[in-house]
Length: 118
Image (cartoon, rainbow, N blue to C red):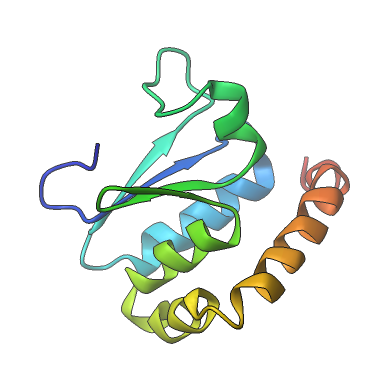
């Protein structure tokens, strides 16, 4: 459940150097502090799904909806004013499949990108 006063909860893989860098950027951009970031790789962290599922794809709770993949990124971006237009575009039904396809390509490249950042 989202932290009171925050509209979006993000679960991320804190063991992933790529994820840590991206979340660090999102934290800086979240000047209103409306996003609650949770490191799902931390032992004992409460997750809405099985930890392996949470770590395999990006997950966000926006209100009562649990989203994953490109839809989760779109929700996070909508919460950050400077990224809101991108979040709206990514959440627009005709564009959602394109963003999801891009996210799936990223998932295949993620292990290689992680190795480069270690």
